[in-house]
Image (cartoon, rainbow, N blue to C red; front, side):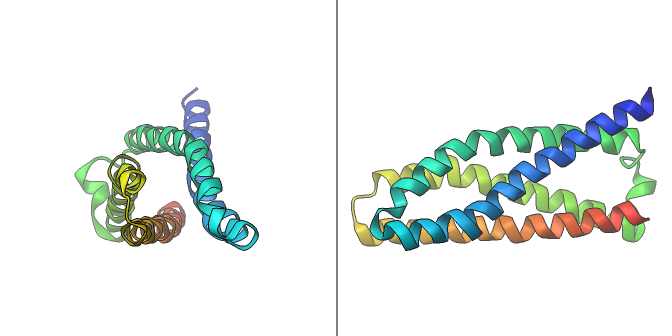
Length: 157
């Protein structure tokens, strides 16, 4: 029974990771460049709608990743101080730090930056905030890839 529960929670954890990181990759590498090329100045409207639809999925994925990650660490005994030592422990701690950074960036963009962009009147200031927002999405994408690399390292132990 324990193994079935571990598999189910790992599946949930991995699925949430795919949805969040895959969504970021799709937005950055496919949707945004396509919208800019086809729609030019109107790309912002499409990307606003894409973001509006993706954000709830990303939020849910973050919650699932957080809860399932804690559960998996507890079930595998990785919460004890002994297992957080050495290279494996350093990788786990870095993975946790990067996840928390990513979640913080995600919620900062949604709760602070997006409303500021929406109410900004100046085109120059709006463009500056949008550039900051895009750079933060890139930060999350690169951080997510680093988390995947650390996950592979931790999983090989």
